[in-house]
Every structure is written in structure tokens, then in C-alpha cells.
Length: 408
Figure 1 (cartoon, rainbow, N blue to C red):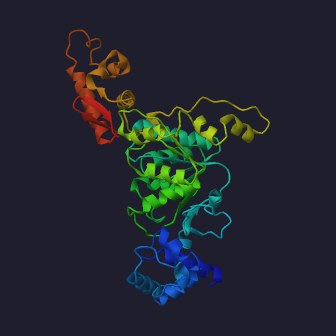
Figure 2: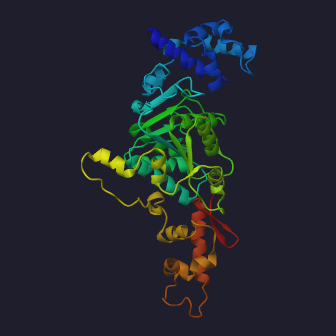
């Protein structure tokens, strides 16, 4: 085993010790090589050079760490990573992006295009709530796609909702997606994003600081959020409740001097409570992808010119994402109903008003012309309720009395 391989194996062994999170890992390796720390811990001692131990580190904990390391075969530590095609990257790698970060990871595990780690070009993190609205999901997808088309690297946490939609848009536009996860790269969380994880690992880059097999413990996700903030030039919060991981990512970004942007939302939607608060506190509003590019000192025109060389830029209208593209199982009636309630809660009766003429056509009784000619509209309302029930089962809306509301 080469000296370099041994040092890497020791590094992986240390971050894999029980109760060793990012702070303790960085402390353990703050003044010594990883192999030196491993040798000391195997003797149940902490090197004097490390100085005072962080709060929570006890002599009993040190003893347990030593026991774990004594039984470990260092020459086999890296085998699972090699077999899975996962690279182990640390601060000695020329692609390391956390050299100036105040709270860097001790090590990164990566799968995919390692060049996406390089702190070059422009990068934007798109984050938000898992419990997003259909409109928020659509916006995240569109922003991911348009940033990709502008040559911007898109970073997100591969969670459900906003994160996943942003990366799906990036991949569909053949862009550079960098997914930062809070578990081992072999532990897909949430499981529903399994295909997306695989696509990011193949077409972009999947990274995390947790060893293989690490499960989704609560503390890992705020730790992941700081990595997202550290990697991105700017952070866009599409939707966020009053409290949530997206706001923690925004806080981490502010601490690092990064620009925070937010998409305005309805004051009736709890999924926009956090983003609207960010805007009130001075975040840059995002009304189109151009607002993000302006913060990066870019524009679609400049980027297109760069790509096409001397050819004149081609100006295309903004992408309009259809709900059908995101949720293909919706019926035409379901898609139209969902469009009607995107701007706020709507009473069932109002869905049959002239304002929703397309819905009236869809809900009409078998014999045309009955609505508005003395016939009871109840069968049409029943059909609305049937469709709402179907949308509720998909987690898209809820019925609050007689009012249809997007799920936040």
C-alpha cells in the first residue's frame, strides 16, 4: 500500500468513526496527518498537538474510536469505493473547491465528472422546500433548464420537491448538474429520487462527505447545506416555508458573502413564507432567469454569443413548462384545474364561472347547453370534486371545505 493510499485510507477511516461529524473530523486532522491521528487513537490517546478537544469529546469516546480503528484493516478501507466507481477527494486535489471556506469538509466522496468540482465558471444553487406547490416545481425546473442553457453549473441537494425539479430541468437541458447529498452515495434518500441520483452521477457529479452506508440522520442535512452554499456563487430559493433547510442554506451563503436570491410567491401560500421574508430582508427578487444572470454579470445574449462564436445570437422566448411535462399522469381536466388554483385558493363554484371557461367545457354534461339554462350544475360540481380527490391522492391539492388549495 503506497503512502498516499494509506493516508487516504486513514482519512476515510477517521470520518467514518462513530459520532465524528464534520467539526470533529476537521479538529482531528487540524495539525497532523490522518495516519498520525490513527496511530495515536489506536493507543487510546489524543495527540497533544491537537490541543483542547471540542465539547462532547470524552475519554470514553476516544477509547471507542481506538477500538474501532484497531480492528480495521486499512488496506481494505478503499476497496468498496473503488468497486463502486467512487473517488475520494481531499484538500490535496487540484480540483478541491473549499480552500477558502470557513467550514470545509475533511473529505469528499464523488461519483461522476470530477471536473465539475473545480471552482471555475459560474455556479448557482437552486434550493427550496420538499412540500412545494406545482407552480414552485415548475419554476425550479424552468430555472434549472435555462441556467444550464446559459452555461451555468446548477447545484442542489437532490431532495424531493424544488431540488429534484431543478436538477431534472438541468439534465433535460444537457447541462452540468452537481448534486450534494447528506448520506453515503450508496444510500439514496429520498428513495423516490433513485433515478435522478443515477442520472446526476452519470451526466454530472454526485458528492457528499459521508462514508458508504451512512444513513439519513437529521444532523447530516444542515451539514450538507453548508457545502451547497460553499460551492455556489449564488443561491436561489424558489419556495420555502417559514422554517426549513433552504433558509439555513441561505444563512450559510450570507456567512460566506454569497448572493441570495428568492422567487416571490403568493402571501396566501405557506410555501412562500420563507422566500417572501428573504425578499423583505433584502434578497434579490427572481422574476426570470435574467435576474440570476445579472447577479453573475452574465446574460443569455452574452453566453449565446460565446457559444456560437461570431454568429449572431439567437433570441428565443422563455421556456414555458407545461404541467403535463412534470406530471404526465394528470388528465386534461386535472391539468386545467391545477392551473386555475396556482395563484391561490379557489372555491369550487368559481371553477365553473366564465373565468374558467375551459373548465366549463370540460365539466359540461353530456347534452351541450345545459349549464346556465335552469339545469342543476351539481353533476358538474361532483365531477370537480372527483378530480380534486384524484389530485389529493397525488399530493398536489387539498379540499378545505369547498375551497381547492395547492398543497404547500
